[in-house]
Length: 307
Image 1: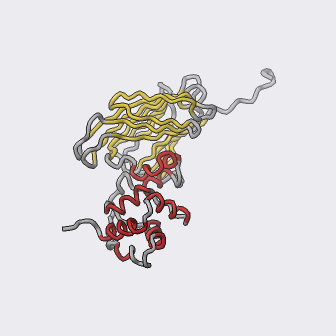
Image 2: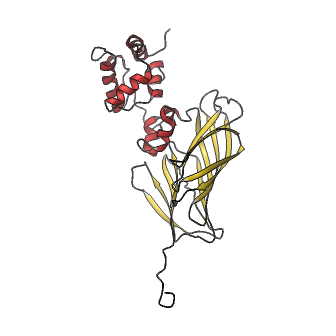
Image 3: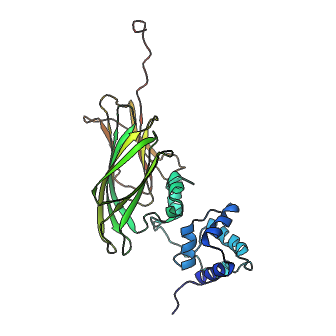
């Protein structure tokens, strides 16, 4: 029995007949204002997924013209829409990624077509991260420990993207748990892409822990917040920010937004403790943007005796 969905058959045959590469097809869609990743087109062609959302269906209509097909050829091959109820979208769902990273985010610009399938082999269960802010209110280090579960056989790495608001002149990564993989540093964007390998291929549902620290030689800007963007709900999340004793913030708030564009649904003030740190440990950690912001002390106006 042939299991490939009818849409994949029709789409694949049309691609072959057109003589176009998937990259050329993606480019022609882009000229019509339709942004579909190379990975998504590949998934459609191989039957791993089908267009369902409004923007994807708009792409299907455009593809019929690009591939010189009769109107309705691809649309009629689609299976009926199957509601997913309240199930969370998979971690590699492009819409979920853009919801928390924003449209055309730095992460998407840096990763290109790989962004749509970012870390599709694993599901993050819990995260603990520690941010260190120096005496100039710039991020100097970031330590992260993550527990993940393989969602399919053969998962062997995790890719992470970090962007530093204050800029970065240099970045170094130390991997404590895991095997250091490739690292790409883009100083103009203040962004680093780091691969942490697991050291072997995991079985489906097997868990793995990675632990790494990013050391940053900051640029000339300033940091006034740190955010974690998660596409799926986490079982556990802890964010702790340490401030230099000589540069304590005047105000700190922990906050949550459902998406990159949304207003904060809560914004609670928090005070530094005896170790000059503040933290956020939400009891529930839904998908979205979790963060801590801070405000530097305002300069006091000089009195007559100080002038």
